[in-house]
Image 1 (tube, helix red, strand yellow):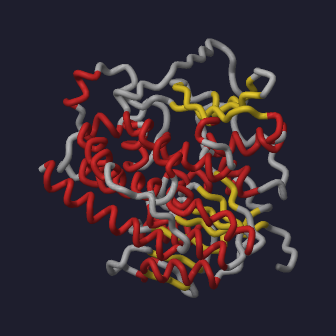
Image 2 (image 1 turned 90 degrees about the horizontal axis):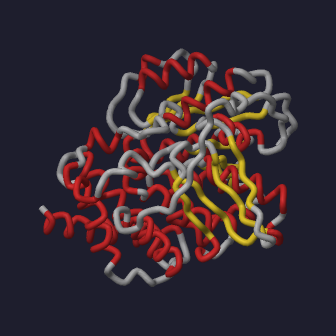
Length: 387
């Protein structure tokens, strides 16, 4: 790729929380970055506004429904649908793709970016959870990198680079504990959708907010960390840290712990991934104020939040188990948000799906989607029984 004065970026899911944060941060360093393509699932008006702001001439509305394309300016190439998204990624020259799409639908765009020799700043953890067995070898074969955007994994990525893998005993992933950390187990039967969406620390989309409430999100992050950093699950820890100031730690062989501390703000991990050490970053987040700062830590309650326990089991078994974990949970959360399942039934549905044999390994992306389809068919059957 010919050297350019600016680092070119494609942002997928530009109207969500990660995409919006990325655009706000990039606006402060617009002399260093250019946005060359954008996507949104259905927020057409907001997508048009962002495209106009950035003078971006390639956009995609990944929802298959009809949308008002007259909202976009003259000369704007508008792609539509999931296949249109893949085409836009492959047709657009860019240095890096920020994949901020939520859920399993983010996997195909990740692969499209890698296939077209683009680095990927990956917020879509489902890409790794579902296809981690070959995703990184595929990226290496294309000569490109996958850089984590989750605050926990971005922290671990930086700490591993600073200290070296050989010096580290285990990775410690922090979790806020969600809105029900102190709620008695006897009260969890009364949890509503609105209660589960009210995260105490972060402002996020509906799916990830529910996953944080069940600790399934932390389970997905454990699986992601195993594939990202090639640490066995026995050398990965989860600790509850309600203040969300410590964004993960490394435990050294000699016993000491090192951590990264900053306010709960996704700007730093996003910009660190987009820059990928090619552009120096300064004053990305507000300096941490130690006035009246209290940090607490505790062990997760695996009886109240069994989905975290099941994630450790799934990544230890490998094969199709991580795919089953992700697919069953994604289906269950959709039904909970629609008012068709109770909060406690999310874990119940996932447990029943995981009780089946998912040990068959996968070798191709077709295998991954085949397993995922089977998982969702079985989840539908379990759902009907629960109803």
